[in-house]
Length: 540
Image 1 (tube, helix red, strand yellow):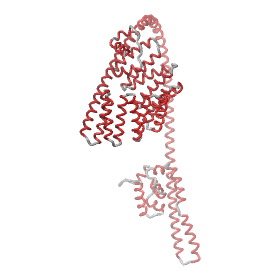
Image 2 (cartoon, rainbow, N blue to C red):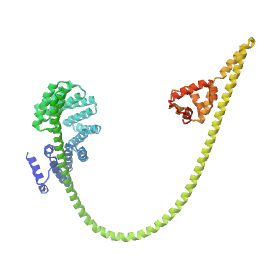
Image 3 (cartoon, rainbow, N blue to C red):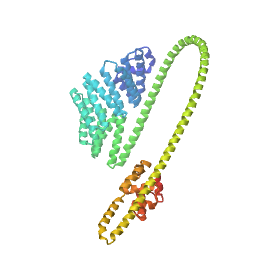
Image 4 (cartoon, rainbow, N blue to C red):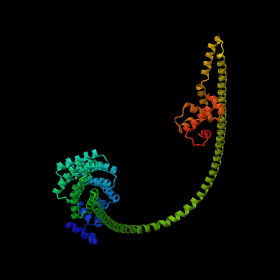
């Protein structure tokens, strides 16, 4: 109590700080002061930090960085909190004292956890665990296990979360740490609640409540009562939920804990709504809204006060830095004046010399650039001519291939027509009564039937076609991958602009059958009404 009075005395009379030693304050004292006035806590710790920096006391500097980080952490300014925790971390890594180093890692991990960066929090907690294990510090190990379990819980890895909470519980039981045991029971209950194992969740919450009650820890008792009310509400036991939540409401009101009181109001509004008592639900919903506004305004006022103090302290630090810089500047000005006179003389001569060299260099550079541009122009013209020649050659080759393809196709059509004509004549001879020639003529008809099959012709045609129209069939299948071999032949013949009569002859079908085939092909390719089939195929 005397220490706390001393803090407020120093805050009221900051001039005294220059006349006496400004000591650091403990974590417990920082927590008490943060609850009263976080701006005052920041002011006092900042002055202690200045003194520690002047005395080059790295241990106290690290402690002050930790405490300033705590100030920002309680205001949910996690970015600034991490900045100061990392400053402390940089110093503590060089100290041969593992416990403060491990505790600072816990603070960093905790800040990541509440800023919802669980992936960043886990590696930090694991590093803290390794530090505490090496130092055989069981309390720190248990605390870290519990944090790792909470991080896994928020990631949805509930089995891993439960495993680490049980490890923490074993150590806390060995240490007979009632507060730690109660907290782990609460964590395990929350884990079971998230997995919707409400019976187990209720069991662990009640164990935690019993321990907190025995330790007269009314703050944690309030939170546990709210959790128990949640479980009863989720399981449809609305009356039991009301009893638990109203107990939490009463305790929170006595403790003036606005956050837990708001949580109780919020849960009561839900509970009454589920019970069909909407008047009561509206009443508590309004209380919830009002207390939320009060919390928001109070937090805003604290943040504004903290920002004002931070601004004033930074302003004062900047003024001190400016004075020091002014002193150094005055000393440098005298030296600079003498140097300037000597430099001006030297510069005048060197500038004249450099200017002459520069003009000569620029002239040489211009000459080189002219030659280079002329060479580049010649190279570009040669490359252009080469490309034009290549394009002409490719065009000529494509035209030649197209002619070969058309000639090959027409040749096949004439061949099929000749074979068909021979087959018809031989069929007529077979119908005659000359029985000696009938067997041989039937064999000839069979051979001609086999010869008129188009598979071999199609293979030869396809080779030449794909040389002219590379990857055509691959692009075609992007529009429809269910086309038959017959469809592919029809599309290829349309692609080379054969007449309908030639196509029908090549495929061995009638013109009417060709029209039906074209109609079916349009449907497979999902062509709209009025869209030209040949034009569509040509653009593939």
